[in-house]
Image 1: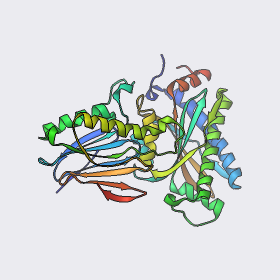
Image 2: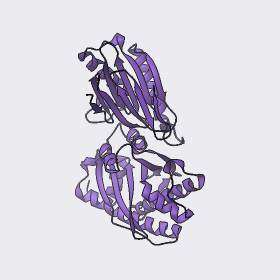
Image 3: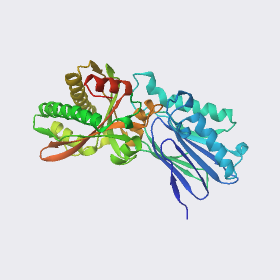
Image 4: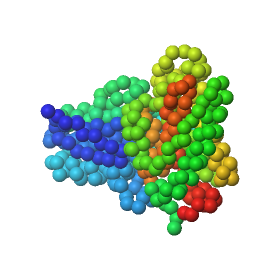
Length: 160
Length: 207
């Protein structure tokens, strides 16, 4: 029996096969699915903003920002037996939900750029992505296979 | 003491905001009545400070398909207003206009979209006028931008814009009564916190 673990907004979680991670309705946020296929450990982070440098929160929520969340996710996956050199990434989200009339509306793209850059810095290859455009996405991440199903109201379900 | 976060608002502050919401809702009901050519009433709205996740759960969960309208406010008060129109509300409005059967929210035509956007415009103007009337503030509103999609994805936009500061919003929960039918209307007001404190102090409220 597999169980399904929900990852909220500004949240991250790690499971082993055969469990499934799900995060609902990514808009301009980005879902980062990291996978070590040897030990079948899957980790998913749902980030809201590119960089913790911009935070003025009283207590920093490290899971909210791409820079801190990805580093923490990789670190925690190693406790589950994953090795950074084997981890691959699939990413989804970063949409532009409302028609552009100000720079801030491109936050989806800025999130994607930050995620790509941070993964590059950690030498984690991005092997699939479903990003950008203008619609919301729910992501199911299967620890058994490393498959990521992306569900949207506009496009139905596709597997990346 | 200055307020840095919405959860520092006390019951008196909330009452003031509730009264603003009340006046705004009255304005909105009148304006929507004349747009639709029939009587529309609105109940006293509930105003609360909520986390985004709570607001999303309250509105039917992250995957609920809704029409979201985003309006930017600039001037003496800066921030965003997000209207969430659930399917029954959109249907009731569109039926009055176009006299057709239930519509598919994901496949709105140009006319339907314009009608919904106009409702957003009226709602935003009604609330903003309430702020001007009471608070003597100069406020401009942008043309509403409309998206129909998963609620969670729509809410990510204001959540992100203010996410570096706070995860909370002012949530205004109102009910319109149209043709003896109660229809939920929800508005999420995200004033930039300095604007909010200056508004409250201009109304003579201790902060």
